[in-house]
Image (cartoon, rainbow, N blue to C red; front, side):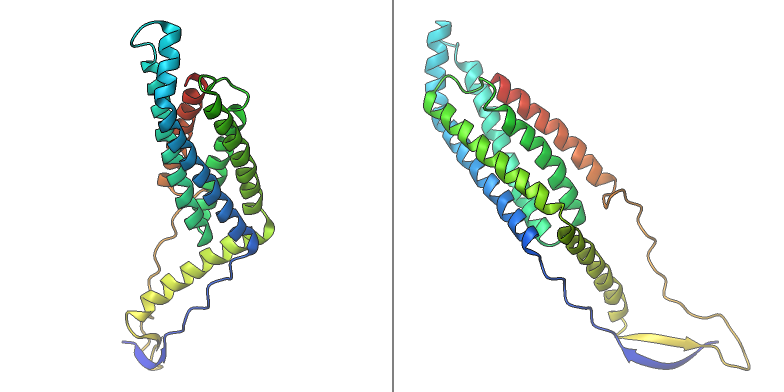
Length: 236
């Protein structure tokens, strides 16, 4: 038998680490890029009838502009998905989620490639004002995303993400203790030694760069999605 020699109040977790300016600026830049993509989606929806008339006249058939409209609709839908994704990543980055930072690098790099290809391609040559708008949005989002990726990789940002992860782990450990209202301390009597009671800790989850299998599955799905976006932009 073991003997309870005392109980101490459960320790309180330390305050969450302060968010550095580099992470705050990166979240604003990601949100700004998402806002421009939403503007591009709305503009593309308005431009669809003009593209349909333009390509119908070129093909000289009633259905000549149907393929162009389908490509524009696909582009608008992908822009909406991309905007929602980067808003979510900006929110998670602000709270120091390491997996979100990795995903921001992956999707940000692919989005930078797409934004760089749009001004060099002839994807939106059918309507002049829409072409100028899409090229301008591509250049702005290229600058925003490049700056966000660099800011998230700065040493002060890395330290914030590491400390935020440690803070969450500490809170989870103390929450387990708080279920009992105290931190127990045990010892075995001198005359009758026995096994010591110990708090069982949850097994450490194996991850790669902070991501489990579901995180890497999401990255793979995102890569496929953005390659589809590139194809739609080049053939739209």
